[in-house]
Amino acid sequence: MASSHILSKSTFMRSVQCQKSLYLNKFSPELKDPISDSQEAVFQTGTNVGLLARQLFPDGEDSSPPTPFEYDQAIMKTSELIKAGTKVIYEACFIHEGVLCAIDILVKDGKGYKAFEVKSSTEIKPQYIVDASLQWFVLTNSGIKLSDMSIVYINNEYVRKGKLNLKQLFNQESVLSLAKENQLFIQQQIELAKATLKQKTVPAIDIGPHCSDPYECDFAGHCWKHIPEYSVFDIANLRATKKFAFYEEGILELSAIPEDAPLNEKQWQQISCELNNETIIDRPKIKEFLKALKYPLHFLDFETFQLPIPTFDGSRPYQQLVFQYSLHQQNKAGNIRHFEYLAKGDVDPRPQFIEQLIHDCTGLGDILVYNIGFERGKLTQLAIDFPAYKKPISRIVERLKDLMVPFQNRWYYVPQMRGSYSIKNVLPALVPELSYAGLEINNGGDASGVFSSIVEGSFEGNVEQVRKNLLEYCKMDTLAMVRILEVLKEV
Ligand code: SF4
Image 1 (cartoon, rainbow, N blue to C red):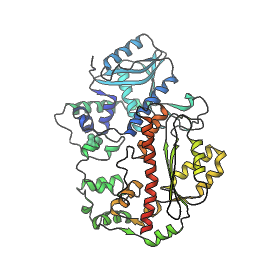
Image 2 (image 1 turned 90 degrees about the horizontal axis):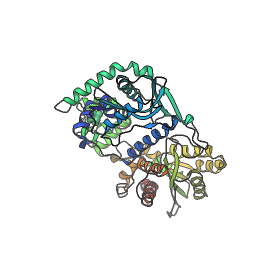
Image 3 (image 1 turned 90 degrees about the vertical axis):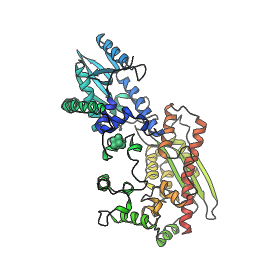
């Protein structure tokens, strides 16, 4: 039996962000952007957190529908469980005026119930209050007596020691008064959403800051089609409000920006380099940078992953944990050797990571990283978490140098960098023959997502193959640095 609902909680939340997104989701879902590996990992994470939080209120009855199309069964089951006086219900399902909601956990409280919505975030975001307000609206109007409405979320100060302590891992906070205050807004939004879904044509809503607030809209690929490949939206460090101000004036191309536009020096430099196909090379500064390098040079890059539920002792929720590195070593004569480490994911990767890194960095010479704050931050944290390695780690930290500096300071800038000094922009501009494009894993987010799923045991692909892909990706990062330095030497 199919469910008769008009709106679900997720489509309602879509409508709060954008009526066009609500409409397209219903009538043109094929226009959605494909889901990336890292988004997939985020969904899985949310599911895992939800399941774990159930243990705060154990031995409940699950009211989930057998399939996402059979919510009527879930509504009936919830009603039966409530009639039977069930103490704890998971995914309790309700419908009111065509709006369907499932609350993560419902706990009997005297004659009524307390509702708990679980979030894998470490704070209560404004959109969660809207979400809880909708739940309050549907549940209370369905006739259930609710005494409280709370959000359960992750406490990022919790440090795991032995068995997981769920009471410490999760925070619980009542949002009852805010949910009650929002009832008129919820009612109005439901009416608006229902009216939108009755329209014959797509709502005429233009792109705007709402496309990524509070969520990245999955129709962006469709709605942003008319934006040129390089536009005012690509001006580095320009606030979104200013970008949309240009857009609203019909200014899309860099060439259309008026001379008196309020942009800073670097932004004008980006525009002028693009329009005049100019390259900036500050040879004295580059020379100074290269002269200060001490051989043998090491090119180092880390990959990290983070999980809401700390898997290993001595780690916090969402702590970025190192699991992989690539290291190219180059002597003065130009000879190169490669070292690498990739954890298996079954035990805490950090101790072995540190030991092998210390071993591979033995000796002298600068250790070049790209964006020093990241590697230095991870090493500093490792020294705190594993004080036995404090000294050798601090010796590595002392040898770190940042290859990003010449690009961040625009000592070397070519139009293809498009105002960015990220290695993903610098590499194709400087070394076009070396590319991430052919790699199965070609960005840090996907590498992290895939490794997280291995640690969580939810990875379903070929582990050997994915390990090979991870090694290739990380190796590319440090090889890119070797080649970038060669280009700097050439100039
Ligand atoms: S991309 Fe923007 S305008 Fe298009 S549906 Fe999404 S939020 Fe609305």
